[in-house]
Amino acid sequence: MSRTIKDRPPGLLVALAAIAIALFGLPLLGLVTRTPWTELGSILTSDVVIDALWLSVVTSIAAAALSLVFGLPLAWLLARVEFRGRDAVRALVTLPMVLPPVVGGTALLLALGRRGVVGEPINDATGFLLPFSIWGVILANTFVAMPFLVITVEGALRNLDPRFETAAATLGAGPLTVFNRITVPAILPALRAGTVIAWARSLGEFGATVTFAGNLQGRTQTLPLAVFVALESDRDTAVAISLLMVVISFVVLISLRDRWWSTR
Amino acid sequence: MGAQQDKLQVRWQTEAVTGAARTLILLLAAALTACSTDSGRDELVVFGAASLTDALMMAELAFETANPEVDIKLNLAGSSSLREQVLGGARADVVIPANLGIMDELVERDEVDAGQISIVATNGLAIAVAPGNPGNIDSAADFARSEPFLGVCHPAVPCGSLAYEHFSARGITPSIDTEEPDVRALLTKVIEGELDAGIVYESDIVAADGAVDGILMDAPEVSYPAAVTERSSQPELADRFIAFLRSPDGQKIFTDVGFRQR
Image (cartoon, rainbow over all chains, first blue to last red; front, side):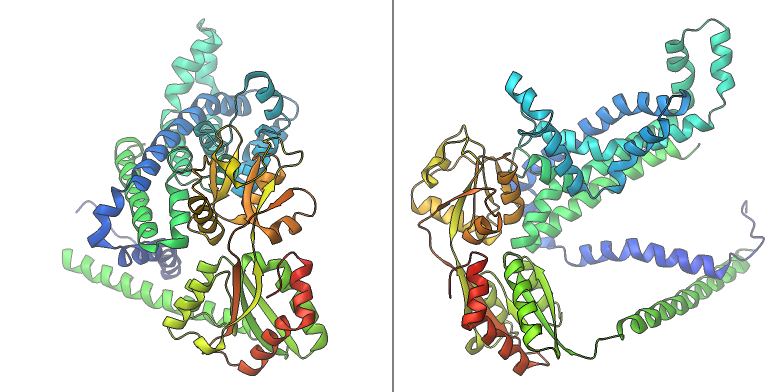
């Protein structure tokens, strides 16, 4: 017996934790009990679901990748570089976490839409348009997902002892080499965790996507949007797609957890 | 050692369960106390379709002004959500969905007596055109063109299914860029100029207050049926409210916000 029990855990803590678990577990139970098991196969192989699944996979991975590419430098800037207005920038970055996603989507539309402050000149010059396209979905997803990566990674950078980086620099390594060879390997677990959280947030994204990119099967309709419209008309399909999303998230999060997060 | 640990484990579990139950009871008691502070007026719960928002809020004000002892509580949502809520046991005295089909389902489930149903307003479809008509939209036939940005409601909601029915009746194969989950979201995108046109209700054109141009469509009318529920604890009051909606004063409210008379 490697485990020893010194004290009984406080009953109050366990009780509150149990309520918390019930809060997350009961909806899942509700979903499972209402699942149309016999028709599950035919629902999940229908055109609507296959199209939405494909779009969700592509856009959520793209959004996670963009969050990593732009979010890591941003987190580094916030953690390592002193500049005026840093707190304001940090608040700006966390804005999508506080804003209702629908509001975020509206703001994106007003900025980058066809008649948006920035979107209109771009459209006039190049004919390129974000709304009602897969690019719009990816942008909306990145908008809501990237803050999760930035916050996770910035926290890790702050906890990282800067003397390692200083030591490497004194040994003659250039700033970019220090970043690539010292900083990134040291915060790798946080980087992985941040990317996975950004991906998960992106997979479930609804409000900003439907507001900014619209809803059309095969073009912009991701799984959450398909669930939402199915709720209006076809409860079985809505429940089946929800279950599919739960399974995808569970499989990915659990398998990554074993590989990435357990030992650290 | 193992047995002792098991016993300990069991004790944790029971402690945890009774603790949890105790906390839950406390929470429930607190919630119930919070709910019991009512106004002392007669409460009438009205479930109405989201498209009736403006009309029902004005009707509430007018009815409460004339009957100060009555407190109307509005629950405004998409018609299918209203149906789910009523079937799920929510307390409603009056239901007013945006289509007859939903009301029929409530009749089938004995929530509403078929003889109680009366129409309080009607509405029609209209094309909302973005300011300046950048897409050169003149009629529903223009929805077959691929270059303008065009939207409809999703066919799962009434405004969407009606739009698609109209397209197929006219032999139009529409080129659609988005199927919005509700009519107000669609209207907003037209107002902002993100879409060149969208198919909405006539009342939405009026609600947009000049922000979009409307083109009337020769499509079938939509009816808004109202009924007292079978489980209502205030059937007489509920009847009076529906009678008010159907009276000249009530009908004026509906026409003011863009509905047609019943």
